[in-house]
Amino acid sequence: MFQIVAAKSEEVLRKMHSSRGNHWTMAFAPLPETICVKDRRWAKAKPMSSPSPSVASTVHSPEEILAHPRFPAARAAFVDAVLALHEGDQFRSRLLVEAMRQVTFNLIVSLHLRHDVTDRSTWATPQRLKDEIRTFGLASPRRTDALVARLVQLGYVDIRPSEHDGRVRILIPTAKMMSLDREWLVYHYTPLHVMFPDPGYGEPMTRDTAFQRAQRLVALDFSAKGAEIMANNPSVMRFMGRDSGVLVLIKLIQMSGTGSADGLSYSDIGARFGISRTHVRALLEDAAEHGDVKLSGRGGRLVELKPALLQAFDRFLADAMSGHDLLYKLARERMAKAPRSALPGQLA
Image 1 (cartoon, helix red, strand yellow):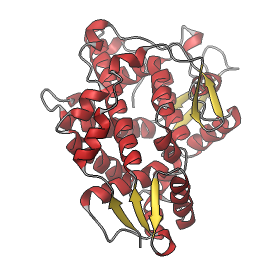
Image 2 (tube, one colour; image 1 turned 90 degrees about the vertical axis):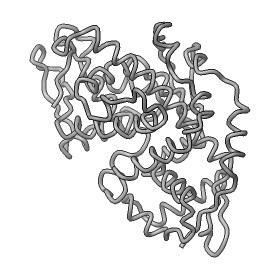
Image 3 (tube, rainbow, N blue to C red; image 1 turned 90 degrees about the horizontal axis):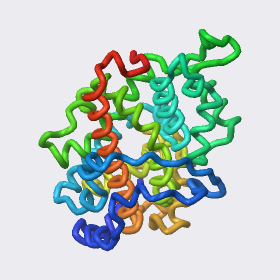
Image 4 (cartoon, one colour; image 1 turned 180 degrees about the vertical axis):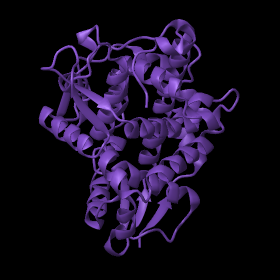
């Protein structure tokens, strides 16, 4: 069995968060020419869209989110929502919960919804997908092809020839993929809904398909922001870059928050997410080498989450919440300006 030790109190962590001074609006400063998302993987940064002042001024900044008295409750709600969807589902956890795979999944949905048959530059082709993934520096073209083939095999994606040019293949998400995407939107908006319940975030929480369409359309213009968030949080990315790694991290955070000192065996936690006990051990040993956790006790089964890792996770979550708040407001603005029938793309 391994045991989780919370090294610092909520109050101490909040003081650590408050020492960081970057304001959310600085997120839209130009990115450097290259960004490092994973060790030894570099990507050319894309120009990033900027929201209108009327929208930007209403978005909750990461600093505001971290300082909010309901942040601990929002974090707990996010952790519980993620684990409710993935824990025990070995197949889906291993297939999709890794940085490159989840980015690929999201981009296929967004590219499909932006597809305009009259504009070839918008066609959701395998090459267009690779061009977008290059922003994140997460995968080679060959690995992207392999993942797309796997998604096709498992019923998440169809590949069909274009009706206007039979030589061109078009990626089309299936109803199964669109349904899972709506579930992901639920747990991404859950912490915001907990923190700011009035008026709340009703559309994603009720799995509204018109909101899904609008949100994914506007999200494509801010893919560079997503890459920046990843690049700025290397501690979390070390977990996200491994099969089910971020789920292991989230499970450890849940255990530390509930004081479940009896813990789980490496085999047990691996079984929950479709990975081996050896993979769990290697993941935690790598985290220990980077100073993210401390392993002690027989076989290294006593796991202490270091304050820096807890701070990094909170910062990552706050950055993501702020980004999703922006996309929520842009999506609502888009929905208000255009009737449902005017939004491109088909939802299943």
